[in-house]
Length: 117
Image 1 (cartoon, rainbow, N blue to C red):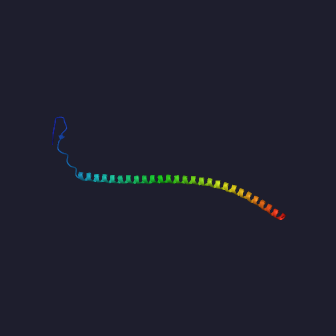
Image 2 (image 1 turned 60 degrees about the vertical axis):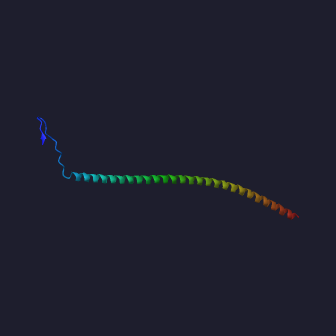
Image 3 (image 1 turned 90 degrees about the vertical axis):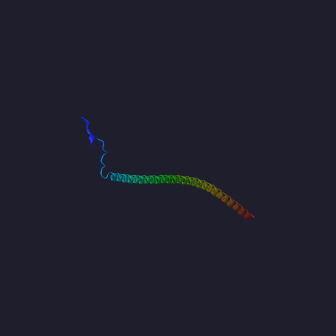
C-alpha cells in the first residue's frame, strides 16, 4: 500500500519481502569465500616455500662456485710450487753430476798417484 500522488508513481514504504533461502545463500557464499581464501593462503605458502627452496639452491650454487674457484686457485698455486721444486731438483741434479764427475776425477788422480808409488 502506498500513497498515491497525482501524476506520480506509487511509493511503497513497506519492508521488502524476504527472499526465500537468502540467509542460506549468504552462508553458502561465505563458506565458498572462506574456502577460496584458504586455498589462496595455501597457494601463497607453497609459492613462498618454492621461493625459499630456490633461494637456498642459488645460495648453495654460489657457495659451490666459490669453493670451486678457491680449489682452482689452490691447484694453480700447487702447480707453480711444483714447477719451482722441479727447477730446484734439476739444479741440484746438475750440481750432483758435477760433484760426481769431480770425485771421479779425484779418484782417478789418487789411483794414478798410487800406481806411481
